[in-house]
Image (cartoon, rainbow, N blue to C red; front, side, top):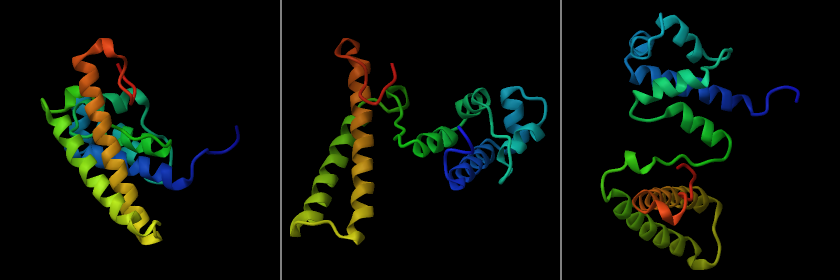
Length: 161
């Protein structure tokens, strides 16, 4: 393989996600103390735009364990065409079912409105796709919750254990 696989914007998004993650953890110094890295300088280099290095997977896993949202993992998933969904342990009890039903209802309404004239216009495409993504996410969360409650029913559709 020669060169980079993704467009440079993807690598910029990874640097931005790293910066947002570090800011959310109270900057690099606080994050370095949280994960046992000697100095914040080593973490700051991972957020520096336009240059290597990028954060190694073990550092990302450690940092995101302390974060409210896995910014870098989400950016990696999006770069490779995946939708990141939390596992059932991240969801409130019973929250996935209510979310899935509400999102599915909104999606049906949105898509029915978009296709009322038999076609999807350019202006309608982005909002419709966003609604579909939110619905898919909610349904994957519901599936993960059901799989966790009934392990003998098979693995969650979105992957995981």
